[in-house]
Length: 369
Image (cartoon, rainbow, N blue to C red):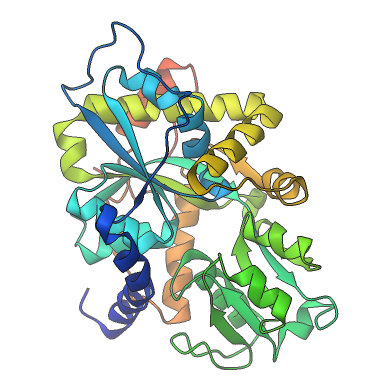
């Protein structure tokens, strides 16, 4: 896509990913997840597709809890048999896409904007979305001393995680619908958009350098714990209060060469989501335990509980909402209209769902022919 706006979208996400990429270069783009010893290969298990390992990427966010819980409870390892699960943790979508393209990971949990960007940048050759994972878990949290209504957002400083990321696009679209004019690249205008890493946003909020933030969980609940107030839950802006926040993607070459391994990971993801929805309290604890294993720090209850309750875990990729989110990026001036035909390949997921007696999911016209 040679046009200026698509270049701007890619340039912005790539530039913001540069620092994480430099920091993670020594360990293959992503930090290797730690094994707390709870996941073991079953005796007598055989390798899947003859592979020694499958490399899985995800973020240390609750919106990626399918991956967190699936690793912590051993669902992935069980389905892959003697093929070792090798998890890697990422801080940003662009760095995970780079890892996928380089072969540093095979399968990943990721948000819609980097998936769209990765697909269009490669002319549809780098990745496929093969399943859904989560909906919701994004909020506009504000300083109640400065902002008491949606109208008060005008003239204020609102943080988003990075230029062109999923929440940045959503906020710019919402601001435009309020009649506010904002330059998408600089973030300057009737509202000032401050691109801030989720790790530092709570400190910026506490220091008063931002007045609010449009962010995913658990960052939103961390801001509430610092005295913030939820002014808007993004789910209220979507039909049925559902919109994709996390998808499962795969490197196309890996899908072609190792379909049995991909199917095994999808079986594990479906099994994990089923267990999460049937055992929400245990699942919440498992996700938090994996976060602690990965980062060395668990979330406190006043952050974990409200964050968890705002996320829905689903196998459905909610493909229609991905198309809408792409349209929002176009409207915001961050992307030229992309050709997303073929971004989904739900063949293996629907095979797994059929075997489970569940209904198939739809690609909303964006699937592989």
